[in-house]
Length: 509
Picture 1: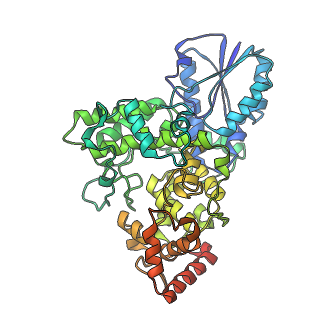
Picture 2 (picture 1 turned 180 degrees about the vertical axis):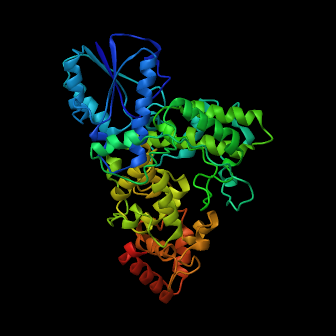
Picture 3 (picture 1 turned 180 degrees about the horizontal axis):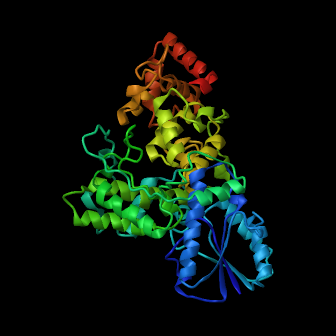
């Protein structure tokens, strides 16, 4: 008998494993405390994974495969990957063990060690999901200090012949990001996002019975996320037909009335492998080609770049730099995460809205994560470990290979410039430009000092002042130091005093 392990993020309905029905093969899918407890997770993340695993088990069973779906409260469940594997190998007299390459370093190491000690043969397979091999990015940038995403993105476009005319990019440019930074002001009607209304009270009851800790809104009676492949395809099709025409234009916009705007919301389905990146890209491109007058090239390119470029790039960074990447802290920040990151109870409207939305839906789009919650954490000097755990726990699509590279790299510049060429920090001006958050905020977006002065403004300059020795030679932010040095010394002192006051009283902002 052969035992094949399927991890919770390996729900690839199209994997070649399932092309052949073999009664000598047992597929093992497990709900485990090892996975629910390594950080504090949002309830919807746990429910979503458990539901998707259940549906995948049913899919295999209906297709005449032998499946063991170990539930969280099953008496046989040891709640640990290795203990469970040993148990089932012995119970079923397994003669060979097979698994697909994990996407998290900790699981990869765990399974490598397990197989090293195995007395039966084993075999490792690819997940047949990603468009690159683990080491592909490392090979591309061998000997380079910076791993430029644009270089990688061009390479991927050429490799897969995506939006290229021979060797040249369609539209004459590889990147149309400059066209995709507009504020949403209500000019166009945003379609309501497609959501589902699953009743997963039974799953929540099992989670509660196991006494698993979680946070956030469960939405167990009307669970909104796709939990099988058919539903994932519905979300993808809804996006390309209804949201893609204006996706690029408003991909950086934020608005209090809309929690997903024109975003696809396919990340959970992608990261659990219910959808493949290539089919997502092809669905978008095929729709664009059928409607060239309805969708201009900047909309489609902005979406393709997120999947073919950024997503694969982040995975490449992960495997090139782990495990040391998880320890990087370039600015030596050590502050605690403000307590209101867990509640959204802050007078800062941008943070309150973004966090409460995250607590409600286990979702926020990339600018809310980067330029609101991430921006503030960086300005406040929060230890990257603190933010890592929060991001990994709160978002339904957060799996370490994609979360930690975005957190340590793009968001917190904790890697010192491997991913980004500068820290992504801003004052209130950027947030006001890209959203309507500031209009109803307790704080005054125009003030750096004084009563109700927006904390982003003084913390912004405090950040640059504190890290001048590390950042002053950075060519992308040289003008910031020119501006700072030109300020009157008494004004600078007041700004730093204001920032210090806010940092000391951060939990009451």
